[in-house]
Length: 441
Image (tube, rainbow, N blue to C red; front, side):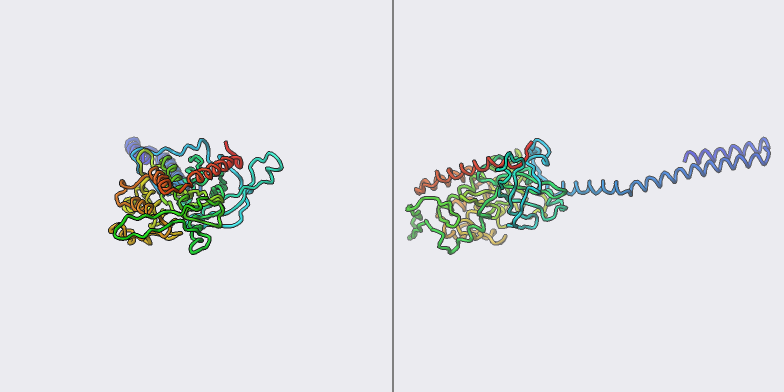
C-alpha cells in the first residue's frame, strides 16, 4: 500500500511540474513508463510472496505436523484426571523404550488365549537377552504377550502405554502379575509378563462346576426359629493341593485372601484398578493368583480418588460401583465393591451377582435378597454385603479385608494361612529371577 501511495503522489507531483515547467512531451512519457514498470514489479513481488505462503501451508510437512499435533491432542483427550493436586509422571528413570527391553525375534508366540476389543493376550516363550553360556542360550521363559488390536488407535495406544508405565512402577508382589519386558516396533507396543499356567481365574473356576474334582469342605447348618447361622468347615484335610486338576473350598478361601492382599498392595501404591474381576486375575501352577490387566489402573495422588472423563473407555457395569456410574469417580472403596463381585464369582464357581444395571438397582433398594453363593460361608456372605454398601465411605478398605479373612480362618480353625504364605514366598523368589531375561539400564 505504501508503494502504491508513493506512485500516486509521484504522478501528481509530475503532473504539477509538467503544467508549471512545460516539460518536453517525450521526456515526460519516458518517466511515466519507468514509474509504471516499477509499480508492476512491486505488485509481482507481492503476488509471488502470497503464493509462497499458500504453498507452504499446504505442504506435506506442515500437514503431517498438524496431524501429529491432532493425534497428540486426541491422546490427551482420551482420558483425564481431575485431582486437586497434580499427579506426577511415573518415575521410570529413562526412556521406556530402553528399559526392560527385548526384541520380537526373542519371542516365540504359540497361541492366543484372550481377545478383547482393545488387546490380545498370547502365550509364548522368550529367549534370554544376554545369555552367559550355552545353557542360557538353550533356556526359554514362558510368558504372556499383550498386544494392541489396532496399533494406530490413539485410545489403545494410551491404554497400553499407561499399563506399561504402571507395571514398571509397581514393585514385585506375588499376587500381582509380574512385568518382564516390552517390545516397541513402530506403533505396536507389546507388554511381556510372567506366565500363569492356569490362565484366567474365571475360566479356571468354571471348569469345576458339578465336577467330582471339586471338594466342598463347607458344612451348611440348618437355621430354624431365627437362630444364628452356624456354618462350619470340614477339618479332615487342610492341605492346599497345588495340583490344578483338583479344587476345594479351602482353595477358594486361599484365593479370596490373596486377591485382597494384592489389592492392598495396589492401594498402598495409591492406585485404583477400576476393572477388577476374575477375568483379569490369573492362576499359576501352585495356585497363587496374579492380578493383571492394568490398562485402566491410575494413580490418584493425594486426592484418594481418580475420575475418568472419557465415555469411550468402557468398563463392565456388572463390576462397577454405583457411584462410578454417576460421576465416574473411582476411589479405593470402588475397587472394594468390585472385589465383592469377585468373591461372589469365586464362591459360586463363576456366576455373576448382577446381570446388569437394573439388577444392581434392585439389590441396592432391597439389600439381602441376593442369594448366597453355594460354597460361601455365611460370615463371608455378610462381609460381601458390607462391601456393597451404597455409601462408598461405609465400605471396608483392603487392609481391613485382609484382616477379615485372616480372622475368619482363625475363628473357624482353618489352618491354611501359613501354607498360603509359603506358596507366596516361593512365587516371590520366581519373580525376582525375571530381571535376568531382559536388558535394563
